[in-house]
Image 1 (tube, rainbow, N blue to C red):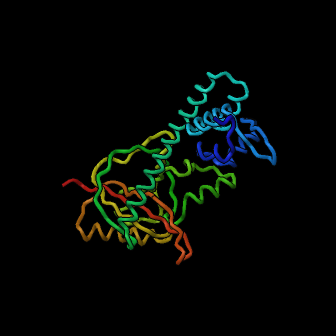
Image 2: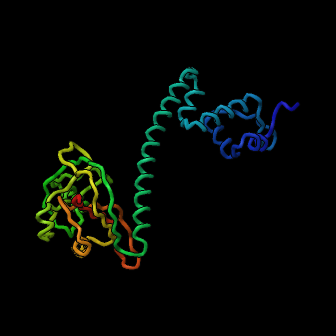
Image 3: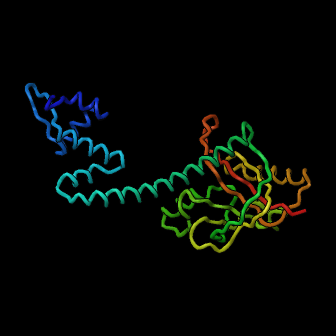
Length: 265
């Protein structure tokens, strides 16, 4: 029975590249036995160490922590390291689920739009609370860009967390009177919640346009309501859902969701 095996054999048996094994040597985690012409050979103790490193790596332990375990830390420290990795993984899984939900939502909207710039549906929503801010801002500007710009120029503005949902609101009287030059409020999905969008059936229009095309989209939305003799109540809501870089037009387009509650019949 051989007392030593080569780096090639170790790599094949353990599924670790020779480059990675050499890197572990540089970190002082293992010490090979050098023979003529720089050939590396490994003992049973080396193999055990490599197996232990591989086990820890497969469980997500950082190399820095593995080094500390090899450097004289008590074996009970492994429990603390694994507990930390476990807790970090829980948080990563939570973020990945949120990310996947956003991706799924965008894919569903894109499928509904197809090759059109507008798509309609009636959709049921649950009640959701928001932080409401009174901001009378033009509907044909990109508020998020302007908020960052103003923030960079030391102007005070409530931005919300980048990436969190923002709802632009036109009050009922202004919407029905076609006074669409300004939004009346914005709702932020963070901070102290002081307002809400009620549950119920809503007419929804998904639109793909730039900010300067919002008035045109508003007209299409109202035309659909009137053509189908729908009765509505409450405020109008616009929620930007995704950005698209249109290469043919050389500009960014926004996929937005227009929403208004339908009266119960």
